[in-house]
Amino acid sequence: MQQGDIIRGTVWIAAAGVGAGLALAGAALTGHLDGATTIQQISSAPPTGGTAPSGPSGNLSVEQIYRLDAPGVVQINNSASRASAPLRSQALGSGFVIDKAGHIVTSNRVIAGSPGLRVSFSGSDELDATLVGQDPSTDVAVLQVAAHSRSFSPLPLGDSDEVQVGDPVVAIGNTLSLDRTATVGIVSAVQRGIDSTSSSTAAHAIQTDAAINHGNSGGPLINARGQVIGVSSQLGTRLASTDGEGIGFAIPIDTVKAVVAQLLATGKVQHAFLGIGVEPVSTALARAFALPCNYGLIVQNVTPGTGAARAGLQAGSTSVLVAGESYLIGGDIIVAANGTPVTTESQLRDVIETMKPGDRLALRIWSGDKEKTVHVKLGQPPG
Image (cartoon, rainbow, N blue to C red; front, top):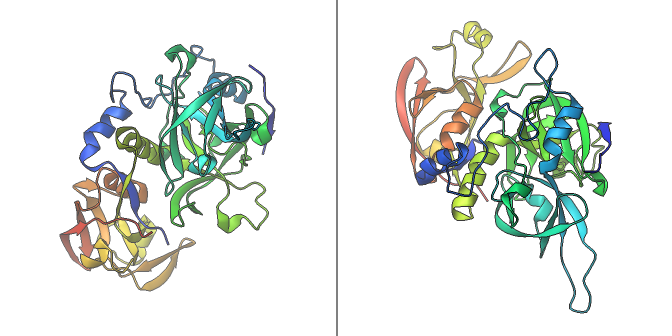
């Protein structure tokens, strides 16, 4: 293996719902989708090479992360050819192996519009790749290559809900076609909205200062335990005309898991859409304005024409500033979804990810000083 360089470098609640395939998604995440296909169960164990030594904090070094995870990172090439002569393969981006059946996750924008795809594990030998499915709205695509299972080194998948600002991360990819380069940084922000290729918004991306460019887009963003926490994505179009130095994004791995489960099952993804923007209720906010509860999600906006609007959910209308955070208060406060308490937007999204358009979501809310349950028929995202 060639050693690469190490370089430092209004939310809508919409989800890729599994719906009737919830049992399928659960099986996929625990490694029982079928006899050949496995999406790695969340684990802090390194994927290959045994147990690597770690520092006092339990975190792996960049060199250890690279040694353990780089074998599962691939380069994705365009295999277009002319009748007269084959064209030289053009590097499109990166991806990473998720199971022993040869399934590879990448960014949809990496492969979008390409008439043919090939995958390189070492920068030299290439294998033909089949497109299993793609989802432009979350910028996720799944490929598959045919080879012996011993050829694959699946990467372990982490939990993006645990990601916090300041966490160290490593992005591995084929930066500017340089084989398996590691770029190092931290999590700069979470729950970022970035433009996606479908003109909708990936509303909960991980922002990092680890260098992410055309070459390593689609590759893994990895935490200090060697687990994939996101799929690296190129800059959103709203940043294309600005200096993007130190600004990179990744699609959270929890979103990727739900999307991949559906793509493996049906080749397409159904997205359930609620149609609201929310902010978590903080203790300071609840105390300052005598809210009826000290936890939950306070509704900030309701998209007209959505299930949320038809169910009568009300957004706040009074702007306040508490501890440096701005809120619109006076609207409904969601405290549970389908019986599950929710204190963060991601928890609400996790519930929606188990559903499909047309399903009814039961929301326990405070409306003024009254607690009640409303049932919202979920729709599909605009566009």
